[in-house]
Length: 107
Image (cartoon, rainbow, N blue to C red):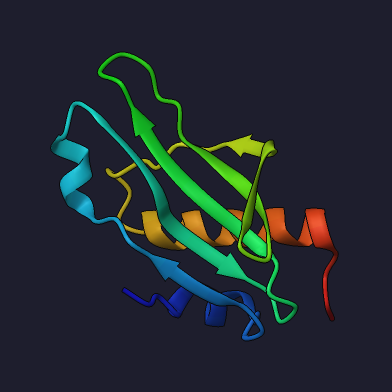
């Protein structure tokens, strides 16, 4: 699913954003999905979201993505709060902030 709203809200039309998870994860008690969300800048670099919960521990994180290669040594722990109506916007906005931190703001 393509999700444009948070990009437009931030005035960051230069980013491609994709969210591949939905509210159904809130009711699951075990998951580990790479590619749960992506953000790419114009240069093709970006961030990949891994959503992970083992029944006890939240292990989800935003990982640095150089082209198509995930850098598993560069990441930021981030948990989706599915009780928030704007959880998709929050996720994408935080991923954009990570991309700007890792690769610079293209403005």
